[in-house]
Each structure stands twice: as structure tokens, then as C-alpha cells.
Image (cartoon, rainbow, N blue to C red):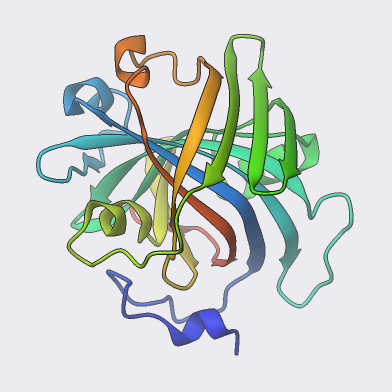
Length: 243
């Protein structure tokens, strides 16, 4: 058994009782979160979902990272497909009381990974030009989608790992174990599992950020809430239709 399955008390709902189908390792993650008025986000999420808020506040997340060691259960990893860069843009939602994530878009730097995620997970992946460089504690991440959605950011951790308390905003943001994605008039849920997040506070220099063009610049210009995680192994289940 993977050690990640020995830690489940943090989950808001049980692990699915069928087998996971894919595993990945996420590395050099930076969680950038901005408080955003709920009214700005509501019109961009499917009508089946409810926008989730913490103390009345909605949140927008932009998360750059690298995927490594991606493979299907029982199969070896494929050298080219198993490693790629990703940038996801998300907010937090519920469906019939079950908390999860809604992705506005996800960018990756390899077409085969983009197409696979579109076909099998119904997720809004896009092909972008990306680059990541790690030098000591500092990570430089650049993403360019169609020359008009750009992120150029340098980040590093500034604290020892912390375990967010269950009543904290950080716990509310991080400990989510499913995402929702629409397909036509139907709604699907994708389940994941990992052990509890142990994150570090982080600092970042944002050299360019035109991601999420539907959010006014005045909100993204404010200092984000920043957290860093070096590594997380994740297990993924097949999509399940919920509506």
C-alpha cells in the first residue's frame, strides 16, 4: 500500500471504493490565491455548481507546477508523456454539499497530454509554451498561451513546512479531493487522493501576469496568498457522472 492511503482523516468524504487508474507526482508547486468577489466568478461556473466561499469570500487560484512519473495503474510510465509542465486556474465549488474544485482552464506544454486530458477527463486543457528552471530554492516558471495569457513568476519557500489546522483558510483551500467538469448538459466528478498538504509559506516576484483575463487587473495586482510544496504524489480515479 502507498503511504498516502494511510492518511485519510483530512478528507471531507471517503475514498472511492473502486481502484484508482492513474498516479502522478506534482513538483515545485506554487499556490497563488487571490480573494475575489463572488459575483465576479459566479457567471463563469456551470449552473449545476455552487460557488464555495470561506467566511463569505470567494477565492481564485493560479497554480504552476511540474508533473512527473505519470502512469496508468499496472503500466510503466512512458518517457515523453510522463513529464510535463502545467498551470491550472481554478476556484472552489460544491455540488450537493460536496466540496471540490472547478477549473476555468488548465495549460500544459505537451499536445499529447493536453489531448489525453480533454478526451478522458473532459477538462479544459490548452497547449501553451512553458518553461521551468529550478536553481537552489528558487523556481522560475513561464507560461504563454496565444501571446495574450502570460505568466512569468519567480518563487521560493520562506518557512519550514506547516500543517494547516482544520479550521484554517489554508485547509479549506488545499484539502479538496475532487473536481467537477461539465460535458454538455451532464456534470462529471473526478476523484483524487493524496496525503495531507504540508506547505511552506512562500514569496514570489510576479514579472508578468495576464492570466484569467475576465478578472479585473485591480484584483490580481493585490498581493496573493502564497504557499509552496516541493512534492506530492496523487492518485486519480475515472470520471463519474453525477448529473
